[in-house]
Length: 234
Image (cartoon, rainbow, N blue to C red; front, side, top):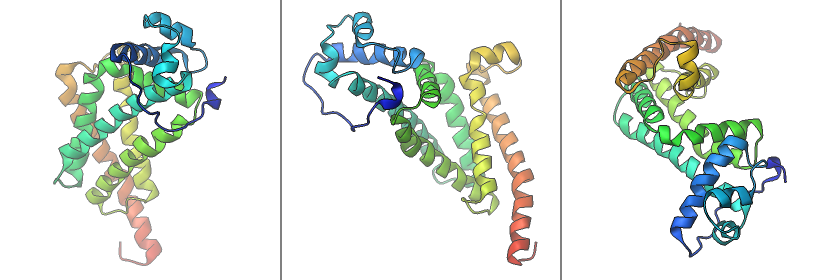
């Protein structure tokens, strides 16, 4: 079965059984799927590494597809928790302050959750060989996250949150986190960019200042263009 053919049947009903075995299967499967992709991982390999009977995947998850869905559910839940933490950190603040809180939260969580690095690898697998679960990532994680950022940028600049320049700026901001996700290779190509714990505030401050400066450079001309198009004074 190709990874592209994985059906999405929704969450499976919980099964009664050995919770420790279920947890081991999830942990092993998460790292194997992240490293090799859905199609290149066998149930037998997962069960061997999890010290489980080959029937355990069917028993706990209803099969390989159900196991993959459970792994993706765990990844999605972690990513949603990061977005929720960023929202909470920015509650009651103005647009610029919400952007700063968003960046700080993401910088600390991306570096602090190194044990969850399999999630980033799994998402790259989904992008290169997508399954229907990628639609859930888009709808349940990325779209709400981008919407929040666009609204904060709109509040900071007076632009509409659906303005193309605002959307592009939100995407540009989130792209800066890749340097933290790709920490190992960044140490080789950009030795001055070290995402060490003691430098996280410095990195967060840089991303915030860089992004706000970019907003000013990009959105002010865009606002002037919108004003001319509508006949408003600019």
